Image (cartoon, rainbow, N blue to C red; front, side, top):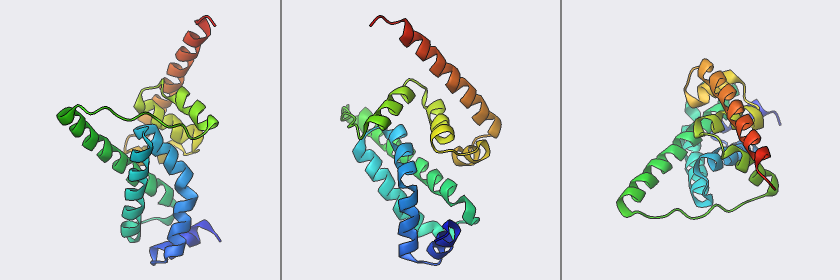
Amino acid sequence: MEYLDLVKRAKSGNEEAFIRLMELQSDCMYKMAKTILKNEEDVADAMAETVLTCWEKISTLRKNRYVKTWMIRILLNKCYDLLRKKELLLTEDAVTETSIRETGYGLAEWEQVLQTLDEKYRLVMLLYYVEGFKIREISEILDIPAATVKTRLVRGRKQLAEEMKTERRKPL
């Protein structure tokens, strides 16, 4: 079944088509949420809230071809909402965050490399290199100018290069 046909069917209220759409995006959405939230429970919460919001609002999607961008934008908003709520709890209760649970060697390795970057660079690098979004699409997802996306890619690469130089200098 063609992807855009799934979108049309989901917009018309077809639950099976919507579920299939979400399944197709689940890996990408997980990586995005994990990059921001780092905690498995928070990632699950953000993804669940995203699925619910997407289902409730899918009829408002203007251009079917941008469904992935639209979904990720909703996910990022949910992630940042969760972070704000956690920050409030942390400042009020001084609660410590639970540890990160690794889900796989490849993901763990990638996360380790990305964790050396500032978050603004980490997100852009993940969207561009791992998920294959174009600069224009990243600009729409993050609601920043395309020039800013390009700058963050350049600075993120420089930060990674510096980190790699530092790691090479460390004695074994």
